[in-house]
Amino acid sequence: MSPNDTPPAPRRKPRLSNLPALIAVALIGSLTWVFGLWVGPTLFPGPKVPERPFVDHESELDPLKSVLALSVPDGVTERRPLPAIERTVAVERGDTLMKVLLRAGISRIDAYDAITAMRKIHDPRDLMPGTTLTLSYRALADVPDPPLSFRGFRFKPSVEKTVAVARSWDNRFEASLDKAPLVHSQARATGVIESSVYVDAVKAGVPVNVVVELIRAFSFDVDFQREIQPGDEFEVLYDRLVTPGGRLAHTGDVIYGALILKGKRYALYHHRMGDGTEDYFNDKGESVRKALMRTPIDGARLSSRFGRRRHPILGYTRVHKGIDFAAPRGTTIMAAGNGVVVAAGRNGGYGLYVRIRHNATYSTAYAHMRAIGKGIRRGSRVRQGQAIGYVGSTGRSTGPHLHYEVLRNNRQINPLGLKLPTGRKLRGAELRRFLAAKAEIEGAFAQLTD
Image (cartoon, rainbow, N blue to C red; front, side, top):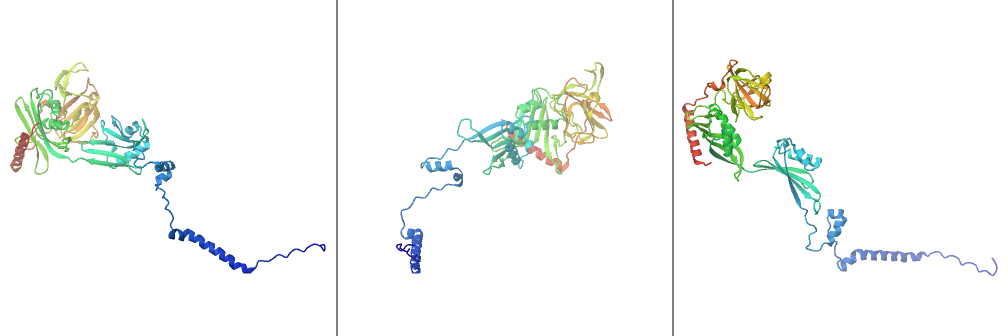
């Protein structure tokens, strides 16, 4: 360093005496911040700021919807509800419920879930041909021919029942069953026979199952092929259950029936005996039930009698060991009496064949069937009037008919000449109960109109 250079000034150290002032400044700043944030607004509130409108979770997940919600003027609906749409489909023969829903364009997953829900209240297998299903949808857009969301279906398995399946809020299907209250009543019908008891009674409005029961009850004493003539008459009184609107839901027993044949009245009455058993009795208190029915088929025409005839296929004359009833293919064949099946299957020229042993003396045989009834096999027990098969043309046959035989001690006899034993005869107190019930039935029939 030269003599003329000025030496550098020494560096001054901070004085500790200024530290309290710095701390005081920091403390004052902190208190001012706290005062401004918390205390100030409370003591000196400023102008109120409008709150942000509430937006629900669904809107928060959809920003576009949130913007639209904020921009909709007061009194204007956000959007119109999309329309519900219903379509109907018919159940066809051979259909399952799954097949019907898939044919209607419903996804297999939705169809399966809906059927599973319905299964809790109604068996899907009970869906009858001709049933109408109403399918419900929700439109997904308010445009022509919009895409659809399947919401469920409903149908009526009977007059008084409605089954409904609907999609719930959580996207599951739930089923419900609605039953209309039923009212018990009785109904009567009368008519003139021009074609047959079956045809003319159905034409008069008598339910089919009532007509069938009436024919079965009379079939022990009346030969419907030979004894019914045009101009004869019928009467019937039967139980029924109807809806409050008067629609028939179910039919019950035939209470009274009568056939007026060539001016002679044949009447029968339904009666429950003291032991709880039920049967039909004539006006003298004699059961109309016999060991065997004269005609084990409804609505058929006697086409060939017992005896010698020229065989239509073999071409030569031989004894016809039964009687033939011409009837449409598929007509039900009934067991002529209670018994045990001793043969059921193919039997040469007889085709499909069933034979029933009724007691130690009598048997009956039924041939040329289209099909043997369900459960009818060798050794099975059958009851009188039970379906054992259906009319066909199997074996040596020129057309659909039933060949019917009655065997006494294993020899064929003429079924039309068979003298059948009568059933139970009421006596004493039971007869008096029956006659009192008979008078009530006749009074009820007289009060009703067709």
